[in-house]
Length: 343
Image (cartoon, rainbow, N blue to C red):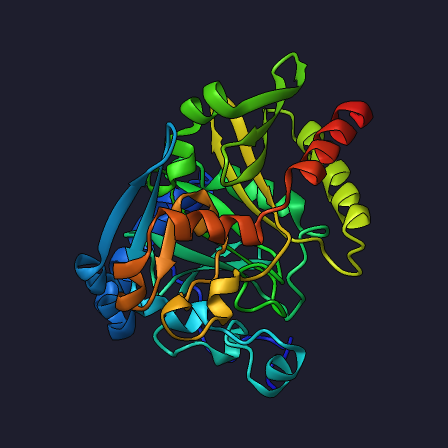
């Protein structure tokens, strides 16, 4: 397995005078717009991946006050069915290690620690992968600060996403995040509605708020603040509590979104999990649905790489999928109470 931490053997950093001007102002969002535009011209695989989005199919399901989309996206089959067992990971080359990337792939440098690449298998019209330069496990406890900072630096256009190593990350052995256009995430678009109808306020301090949202499908801890230390304290409290209550030897199962705007600061959505994949993933015949929920699915867009599954999925399937992978009410109530008591 290749995952050398030595110097990169080829020029992988994308740079133009225009990009450098944006980076001087810490405007990573506009720098990524230019990167994506150029990579579509220079990299056939990426160009085909984004061109294929015009052929995806979407259908929308109405629940009580909010909607969930199902998206047929055959380009996501590799990620959806990824074998993340220890044995499989040991046998393969790490596809996020820089020396294993396609020759055409270029990225924007972030603090000489990460490179931001265009995702050649996109879900939305703008989709990026943010890759740690060294081969280091997917672990949010040691990178939450970076997760928040990336949310701020990319916040002009994008939200930053995190999938835990056992709940959606197709490369659990290599630290990475994703970024997508914030307008594409349904949970952000429906935030006000979800808060009004389904949220319980856990903490209400001056410009520091924490909500517990239970919309019947998902359990979400939402942190809203401009105070990075406050957000970190809430996250660490939740992380520790979830780890202990689920007897997790490694990282507890979580997916997260970091979204930032200058007026209001951060909105951090944390989705606690209990399972990697729903029961229908392992079924045979007509009961089988190839779906492996990650943060984009939990945000409201279910990704189905098989058209037959897209055609047959219904509201009952969706309820069962979320019920299988999302924590129950009892644990959620405990987490909310623990945050309220501790912070």
